[in-house]
Structure formats: C-alpha cells, structure tokens
Length: 404
Length: 66
Image (cartoon, rainbow over all chains, first blue to last red; front, side, top):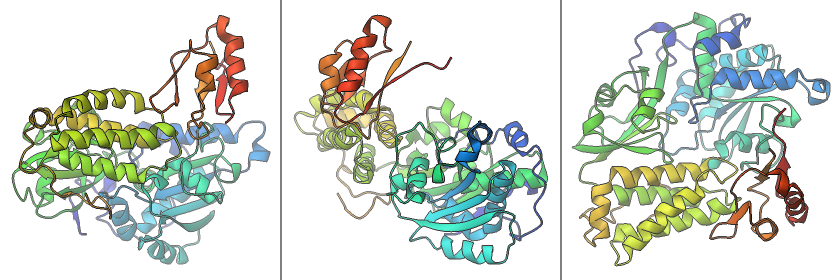
C-alpha cells in the first residue's frame, strides 16, 4: 500500500521526511507542550495524551514509588482494526520517528524501559529491530510481537500480554498508568501518537496532521497524511477519488459510524468536526461504500466480525453481540418478524452499551445504532419485507476468514 | 454516596446480587447485572451483603473520592 503525502507544513509531517536517527531534543516541558498542542491519542479513543502522561507521573510520584518501579512506555503498533493500515505504513516509513517519540516519552516520564508492540504477522518487527540496531538510546528499548487480534490492541490487553498473560483486556481500574507492565506506571500510546509527540519535541508547536487509511470504493486506496481539518472531498481525491458513485462512508473503523457522502463532502476531517456530524474519526479509517450497496447487509458483515473478535470474557459482549447480529440478520433478510427484531435490537443496543471491561461492545453498538439511523429508509424497506437487490451480498470490506 | 461496581470479566451472571438487592440491581436477558443507581445510606448494609454473597467476587462497593 502506497502513501500519498500532502502535509502542508514540514514540521507536522510524519511520513514525507527522511527518517534518520538524530540526537534527541531536550524533554524539559514536553508534557506541557503536548498539552498545549492538544495532542490526542491516534489509536481510536482520542484520549488527551498529556492527561495520560500526567497520570503516569502522578502514580510514579506516590509514596510507594520505590515499590512500583520506574515507568514503562508501551508503543502500540498492533493495529487490530483490519481496515487500518496507517500504523503499519508509519512503522515501515518512519520507524526512527516512532522510536524517538517513545524514548522521549520515557525520558519525560523518568521511565527506564520502552516496549514497541507490533502484530506477529506484520513486517514491522523486523524493520523496527533493524532501526534499533543502529541506535544508542538512553533507555532500554525492545520489540515485542503480539498475536493479531482485534481486542489485543486494547491497552489493558497489551499490559496483560507483556505480563505473561493472554492478549485480552482486563478490568480497569487499575489503569495501566497506575499499575501496568510489571506493576509499574505505564504509558501506553499508539505509534502515531508517539510520532506526533516526537515532532512536537523536535519542531515546537505547529498545526497537526493526521494519518488516514482511505479504502473501499476509491481508485487508489491507501494511507494519506493530511492537515487536520482538510475537507473530506479532498481526502477522497488524494485516494484517487471515488471509483463508483459513493453513498456512504464508514468512519473510524469497524466499531465506527456511517456518514452519508452527499451531505458531508465539505466536512473538515478532524475529531471535533466529525463528532459534531455524529460520526467518529476513531483510528482514522475512511471506507467508501458504493451507493448501490446494501448498508444493513454490510453492517451485518462487520457486526459478525466483531462478534467473532470478542474476547468473550464479559457476558453482555459474549451474549449481547450475537443476539444483536441475530436481530440484524432478520432485518436484513426482511423476514416476517423483522419488525419485532428491530424493536428488540434497539432495546439491546441500550442494554449492551458500556457493559464490557473494554470498549469492544460499545463499538459494536455504535456501528449498529449508526446504521439504523443512516440507512433508516433502507431498513424501513427491509422491515416491510422488501430488501434491496444488494441484500445478502458478500462483504465489501475485509471482514476476516469466515464468510457470510 | 457509594457505588456498586461490577467487574464484567469476573461476573458469571449468578444473579445473587439481584436477588439480594433488587432495589439497585436488575438483570439483563442473559442474567448479567445492571446497576441502576448509587447506593443510598439506607441500603448500605444490603449492598455490603450483596458484595459478600457474590460467588465470583465480581461486585465491589466503591466510595466516592474525598
């Protein structure tokens, strides 16, 4: 997958720059600079990065700090979201920038250890090890390969895996910032977040850019880097423009939201504008769905993927997600009892939301709620027993091995 | 006011909490608890009993930060 590079200012570019190992800049005031820049996590949840770092600093300064040990930084490059490729692209093109960010974060937090986490099947591990071989960092840096699984990239799952357990989420609190890897205060951050942090440390305050994965019905699917606030139509153009008439976009990822293309071509691509439009930018995934595709059917494929990827640790996720998929199947098929399934589904969305240890069920609820809203006209036809021609078609987005 | 918290991973859906404390715990259709509100003073003892009775040790009573 190629990357289109269009970042307007040199300082904000993560990709279109020589990726070399230069002496690290000073870290004095780095947390404040991250705060002032308004940097938020780029792994999906969008949590303010400075707040996470301060939580680690707080935990590391408590009276029992000796027992807790020095902080650990975990760079999360697992990218469990199947439609997302921006982290893999970043790790392939700018490994030093990511390592710089992780090491700078460790220095700013008085940490002694950096763990770079990538998926086992990803080529990134070898690239990172090669990059590390040519560096002499002031803290210990290691690469750890994590099983490829959707929920493995949840931060508590990484901490659990690094502690010798399965790569599955744990109950929090305690959050990793308080008690993480080896019981130490741990800063878990997405690799793009760390690259942004490195750019802030090196170049000072600047307007920020975003890495986006643009896929689906576009001519040149791939990863683009754009200034935050770039209009959606421009982002689609960078991916070669629509390859057919596009009706909607899936935004954020498989636990994301649907957005009608027609009404939102001018929408600035940034977290706040998306939220105002009722959508999530999540991990920066934008997938174009052709206008003649069946939205409810495509949603069902994604929901079934989320069912399969559940860790099945929490009852509401383990039982609720398959129940939701059963309801949506009845709707998609336009069965006689589809209206009852619709009523049950809307009820279940409210029951399942927020009831897991991690945000996996919440993403499934968000996806389905958004589909019922955005594809409301289509859903109404299905409920009347008149599903569209594309109902039951295969998934247009990568949805894992087990097909329909 | 203190709150009941369910450890969603530890919870096996035994449902004792809803039996002992129906004022504050509903069960969903799969038998997993939904806490309906904070614990008022008059239900403190009943809440503590529900916490103690949970076979999965999945229920906690948490105090608000002072």
